[in-house]
Image (tube, rainbow, N blue to C red; front, side, top):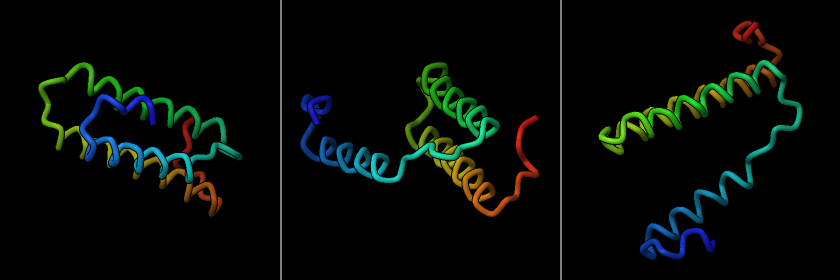
Length: 89
């Protein structure tokens, strides 16, 4: 991908692979408004944590991102199985 051309080869390949995973699995088809709101909050939290705490080690940022991704996955799983008990009001 053009956006990664200024990165070392190993990092460029890693970023390209990660982007391919997102592209393959990402779909907002059927996402409820409450989940959209929650995903918006998660993405803002992730972005702000990177901007507001730049001294934070990458591993800590990655751990936080993992938690947010798991939360989003659980929202999708709950939606698939009809469990809406944790939806925002």
